[in-house]
Image 1: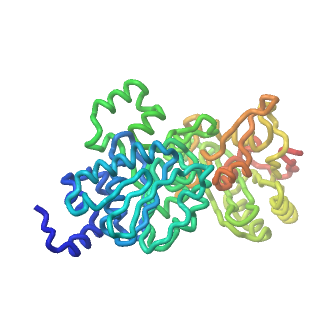
Image 2: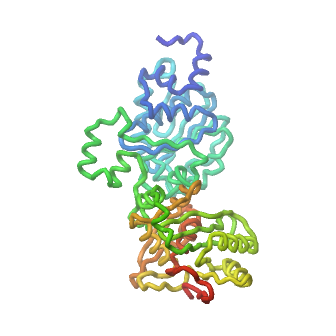
Image 3: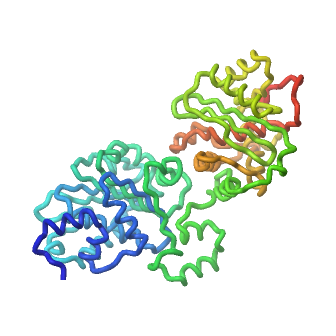
Length: 456
């Protein structure tokens, strides 16, 4: 029996140990996966993201967290959102009701649940349910309290506009934020929590293979019906993002394979060294220099803000140091200044106009062509990407753009402006690598006049 004589001491212990709260109140022991999430959320200011296979108990964990916060903090506000009313009312709120019915007294009788609120008698704290849709971006906005727990269920389906509107609230000092979802999309706020923004999140993966709550028969059935290499198996069983969306130009699995691949230097030592230079326009974009030698590529240098004259000098230094046979510079916009500087130094860089015409008529422009050749290099089970600390970033860049075909049947890569509308940063690392495919290169380009590639 639980000793309720010292309620203040008990609640203080529960605040610090959510697993203890669950064991005390419900008489169950969370799975190791659930326990990891619960303990992570106990920390003030915790930002936790969990991607999950089917049936690992993430909705149950969310319900436990709502009841824990209501019971343990006097003036707590718990905004709960999901992309659909069904997810909130029929799944999450049903779980809350189920576990409230198993609680000890006096909590069981004191907690009141309506269609959109959970409250505890005599206390100002509450959990509220608000559907997070593009048409309702204020779902997580306007909450103020000393204790805040933002709970976002099926976060992969919540539109970026909801997160953008709620950005100030989510960053409130001390606020806890929990996102859980089946990882169905390779874009959006939830996806970026595991990739570009991973330093700001405590990330977990709840695989069915590691969960005692999932019957082995379910895993066997999914493997038999779809195969272990299918995206359905990745998402529904492994709790991993799909290897590629229907319109994704470069598949995640291909990018991951290139990053993991290792080559004997003898496999590419004969090839010429070429450099790709992507010049940043402004702010958060990066200047990037990539070296490629046949099947091997690596990032040489990157920085966000850099004067053009300084950048030109760095390009020249890398050119000499690595004995490059050719240097390809994105000459669109301010990149033309780098090309000009290098020519004033007596050098002959290739000026690449990404928006200009392609050599191959199946591509709409030079950028699509460069990316197409880069994709072939990656997908051919041969290219090796030595990205070091930037591995996750270049994987994000490579897999970020979608594609389509224009009225003439030419392949068209998604424009950077459209990507930014989806909340995706400019793929600077991937653009720099793509530039190295602007034209075939043979060793020693001395004394050859370099043309403008992709001329408008």
